[in-house]
Image (tube, rainbow over all chains, first blue to last red; front, top):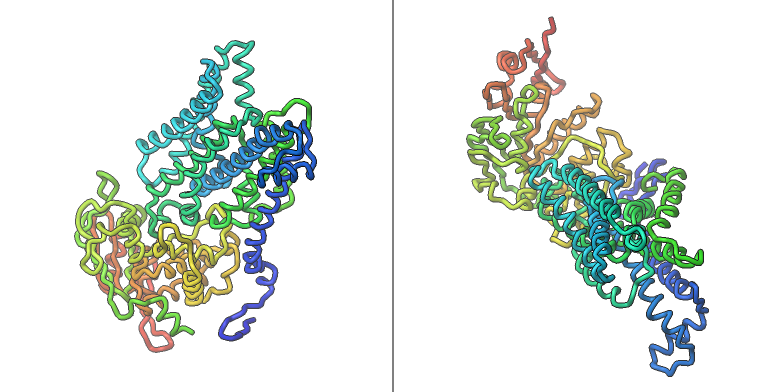
Length: 361
Length: 276
């Protein structure tokens, strides 16, 4: 049944009423704003909880005082905890969550597969090996991070170079997945070797704990150090995000629609890898986030990367912050982050799948 | 409404596009599959590529689209060598309608069609309202506007084929290359797609389509290129190429070509295979 109103055809039929996607589109700005709101609220709550509790009024007094340069009417400990411990940790948690989710979303589009995680090209395995070697050689924390970062990038570089040698453009994506798998396995095995030769009293536990992930050693300097590669990587990703939609239809179709697929794929891999490498070298190996957050985002706003990328970013930041809060607050000793993301993430995702929302409603 | 659609999609007006393939040698690396074929396609013409499996139809059109490098020979569009075109400019000239397939993500139909505008977007842009409007008009032209808000992965094969044609229209290319546009479609949808192809040609597009059915040549082509094994090509008008001898040589089957008159008094032909 068609009605013509002011030159605009309105189709009214049962199908359209049931699946009125047009209205869903108007939801998107509200979703983004609510996510930002949730993030802010979560941040405020995160400031207050922890082994040293800070009440909300105290928190606001400190901030007010700091902004206006008033003389401190609060105990020094609050200030130390807040600015040297909690704020850096909260910021890093958000950045790592946002970075891994964006990288995961990008890789899923690139590899045309919603089951892909940022580890697919070997970034995590490489970082694990770099950190293990650094711990073995008694490097400082900074040294460990640098080694993790370097080996993370090296692993992806190897995957990419080898895939370029093997294939021409047509099956480039599939070959990349295979070389990524091989490189990941290789670096995992190397990491096992380091664990094997490590001193079981001191080095082995250190390696094991690093590999499980955690943000307990975060200092304020690391916030800046993490911010630089993340900004460098996220800006091009954001600007180019519409093209991921086209790439997800396949190599040939994307080329036929005017995209230089080889070049743009390289840019996306570089950016996503930088995001993953930087995050993992600071936080240790945190899996699962890059895989499920984009899924959840897709269930809410759909697969269009124009909105999917910012949504994944926000949900990832919130999720990681919440999980990190649980990691440091729920028990007396801290639970490694990697363990928590799996324990919380997996059943939560299963629950979403079981509710029948397999895709975009 | 239809007049407005014509003007807005085909801003180029009365320019005639001529795609010329001169002695093209196509293949993969050192393997030559098609050796020295020459054919011309102009605006308003439909070239049907016929031939048995594996003879090189796909290789040929992939070379035209730039997915494969031309080994030797020339392909020109209005006398400009398209090998020199950037991917973007090539996309603005030649559009690709692949066989309908299932993509990995559940995009809305309108979003799929709007992706056709990619060739016209800046590096960092996403589609504007005008781009969406062009996409909606393309859906309108094919009489499938009702699919606009449906999910692409949930519609039928025939409907997906129409969406892919709409996407190529949105690209505003003058030449369309269609890969077996009726495969996996039921009889009714096959006829509908062929009717739309005829309509697009009348609107001024040049179309190259591969097909497994000589009947399609009768239904909607102006030119045919029949590729046979051993590097034999027969290029010409439908009457010249689709003959019982040529089909026997190409496919190895006996056929009878029969003529009839339709309701408007026009001669229509069909190809009937002679089994046993």
